[in-house]
Length: 200
Image 1: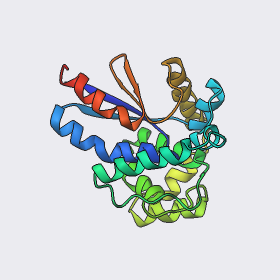
Image 2: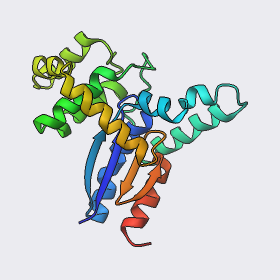
Image 3: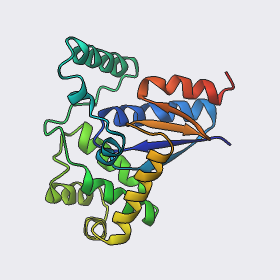
Image 4: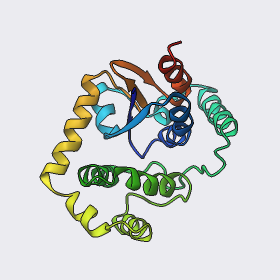
């Protein structure tokens, strides 16, 4: 059975939009999904890249067009719960380390299902430790365990290593997907991922 590896950071709205669409693709192709937490800031630093909001700031018309394309994607897939986070950009270091803890503890799927909507539906300030704890507690997750363990050296090391691995595989931004050694970047390439899985 084929597997899609999804390298993500909660700070990317396009990661959220991709995550919401992927179940349809998994259902149609029979593929499985492996979520790979990495730190987008680390990717940008290692590859001399910039966030789209910075890179497009001085290009007339480009940012407005990117917003139009995002809206088209949202409408096509009926992702009506999406809302741009009012605190954007959010420093995701704490919640990405939390994702590593959740990965170690075997609850990454549950953790993602809590943090994604907190970021991109409920506009929570997810770089505030108290907000993070409240969001996790309200969802029935052990916030003390996750938040406290996220400061441990082995957790920090694993996030760095997974980010370095992403760079070594050619990743320069989020969202990025792999099937085997084949790579695709961006939510708009998801149809190409599906075509590849279907042998087209």
